[in-house]
Image (cartoon, rainbow, N blue to C red):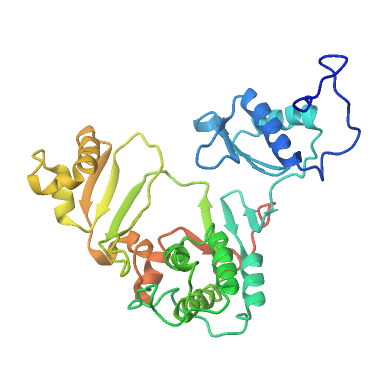
Length: 350
């Protein structure tokens, strides 16, 4: 604690001790976050730039991630001894309470076997369907109609946009474990200021799609040999309002071998691999040099893929149901509540 500005104490360096919890005070959250951040950094953690609540330390087998939400902390690492050491250190400083292995956190349900870890938001999804009145509606096979390109001028403006904003906000959070709805939610998020009846209907279709399998989530096997292949796609100038493009990709893992990057554009591959930069490609000079340098270094290998096998399409455009479901199966999603997946996973491996 420090003296407030302008206050002069008769005994310099001394302050009054407040014998009460910091909860309820206006400065509580800021001071707690600053104190915890300082302590974690002193322990060797690095605070993520894109998400200030995430702290990481080490690499490879000694890598550990620490996630903070107010006064709740989640630790993740393959090194159990390191986790125990960090918990003991935090207990000495803050007097923490160890709640054991993670099972439920902020709507995220975590189940594990010795062979896999599964993340889902089934309860959150069911609560969303029930609150919005879509628990008994007919399900949809895909979150968006293939021929539907939303525009700000479609339909009539809603008199009250509260419901639309609330639903889109909840879908954004559900997107954590359901990347199959990411494109639809990204499109719907563009109309939060002035949504129309058409936009609201599009939100309702996403809810109907979620009803097909609310327990579907991310699946991480433990016996997986990490060999990454990337898929990149761009729906060129697809936005009817701004003529901007929509891009999508699966990437972001450090490997010791070349990453195979699939693209359905033969011309883009030719430009990246061609050592001669033509005049007509000056507007992408920076991007071309970046990709070309990685191709020459051997960190990226470019291969052409037919459009029907372009997995990144699910992130850039509406698809017909059969093709959409084909790509969903490649996203590492499954439902731990279906009998085919062994039903609900238990922590003891049963």
